[in-house]
Length: 163
Image (cartoon, rainbow, N blue to C red; front, side, top):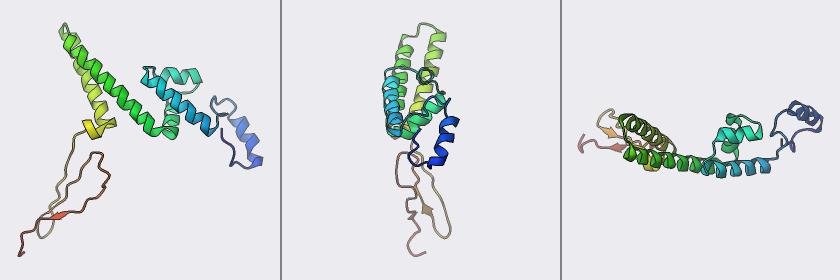
């Protein structure tokens, strides 16, 4: 636990309170290193549940560390994992020998595609648009739900001239 900014009179109590917490003694740099090592292991095929058990924490706590200390790298690892699941499901779909195998492969493919739509929206997400009609003329406002950083684009006024 990083206690640099904690007043001296509170440190002893925090240390005692967190004594049973397995990662309490890690500094911010050590947590960042743990996050990076975890991401490498996940990309290599290990499950976060197994890695968390190894460190004596819950999967939720490990995910919190990943989000706090390596958010972009963790997102990239999730994309990699989803792409691998998609490829595996596509191969299973091609190799399906019976109806049950075919159904299982289809469901796995749908699941992988769903994951990709969420973690890699820029490539696999569906662009959606909203049109708003207002007042005197017609105002059209296109709103993209992709990775577009422009939150509120200006409306386009398509009111016929002379009105």
